[in-house]
Image (tube, rainbow, N blue to C red; front, side, top):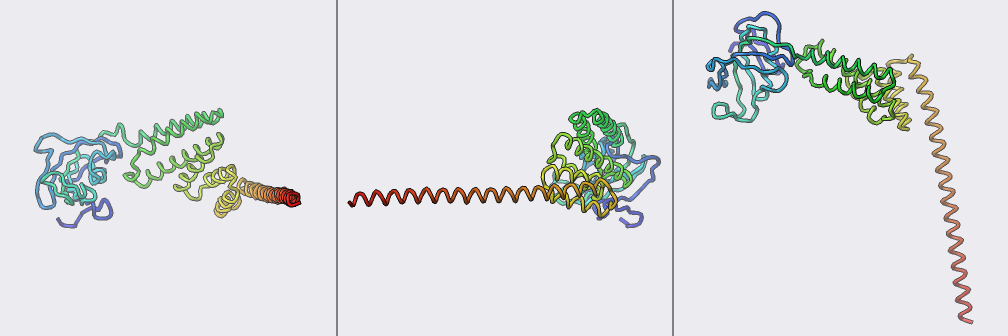
Length: 308
């Protein structure tokens, strides 16, 4: 096949597309249900399947793993009515598995595909909308100080948004979904802090900071978790890291002073307790020595009396 007008979908040559007939209209989104006709060959020209031979279009939902990766990545690049040849290397096909006699292990697959229709009634946007509704419910519960109920709403919202196959989205849509994920992790962290569940809250802060490492709320709430867990040095480091990017943030500056005082007081108390323990240990050792000496003296006196 000529390399002219070939689209490298996977950016590594693993999935390529050559358009035979241009389509019109929209493209499928993650979770769209699509109907296609296809004819499949191996790269050696052996035909192994054809919906046209059966005269029955094939239906599947994009992004749910119902088909090989090459299709989940390739079909969303097509428009309704488009016909194209998808060439799919083994890592995006069946890999090192053989699929009967016609598809040996490590086969490159070639599909001539026509996109017939798209049903967007259950695409990723509907999941996002449901997720936003649950998030808003969580906000209402939080305002009523119902932190446990708020946590449940936020977690249900996050579960929905985590089902979106983000790797299939356009960059703008990825940023939108990641922004919602970040907000939900931060909200869950806050509700857990209010319930004295700092260890769990800390994990959600870290998840939010993976999405946006310099997020001021994420860094501040992480420091709160660390401080409440009496990890004052860690809290101070987190706040200092945050102040590099937000040097005038008053809440961070105040908290930094607060945790430095708490650390110094904790260390002083710990040192005093250590001294006290050491003194008590020496005192106990001296008492044991005195007791042992008295016992030894008593033994010597008894021995002397026996000799007399």
